[in-house]
Image (cartoon, rainbow, N blue to C red; front, side):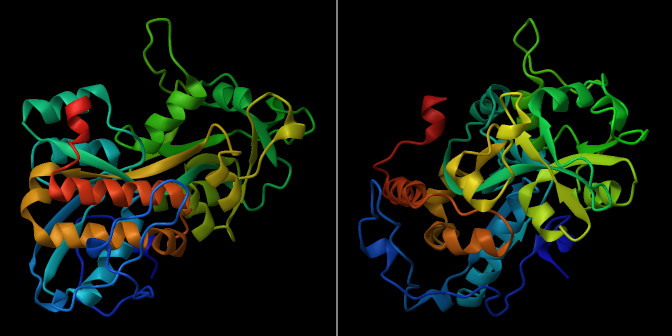
Length: 348
């Protein structure tokens, strides 16, 4: 069973042998991480890592969750006495728990918003954020839909605002087939990001929310089943879930300038480069500054996670972040641990 099918609630990570390969390399804690355009310093476990113990609580994004789970499983192969629980309640739900002081890490498919940052400040929760991977929001239809292969962002907006409800309203040559919409619920960072980039802002500067009727779910696997199992299905979710289910789904190329000749298909390269605009985005882990200063298990887990993120992310279907971004995250982590880098919350 895949990670995507199993990570739906808070799950303790079993102390098991590594699911993904480790590459023993220079110790991150004993060297200065690479900066600029260099690759991050790779990870080698300390000799006594088997004696490391502690608890790490994680919650948040369904897009980032499988990456964190994969990192946790592999790390547990090295440090079996560290108890890591990874939950998935959506980016918004994750920040609620995080800002209440209930978790050490909040997985996020978008940056923290102003209300969430205020909630953290009100609870005296300082935090750092680290980029760990990239993702594209995949626009998908059932595998049997071979007539719609590309779409403009303008048409996407019209569909989700309820102005287009039938495929033949996109193009008269398409079948007379009602569009059945499936998408993330309002706790999802993917939902927030899609609305910001596709639906835009209203006259008051607030992000527009969908006006069309659709089936929302916090579980991306439910969205996959909905789109793939409905003749007129149409939906969106993180690219990794399309990768996992591409035998049942077709992904659409997206044009941001209104010209279908310029539509870009989401691939690892087009997402990483940003060519798949505006639906390519970085993925983050937000880390409690207090937990990071006190929890040595958390420090070592994050050292491993960031150092090997370029291997972990693709193993789950996500896209590896540019090397320079990971090197910057790694350097920032070491500064956060030794206290030379101030929490990101101090600038919020």
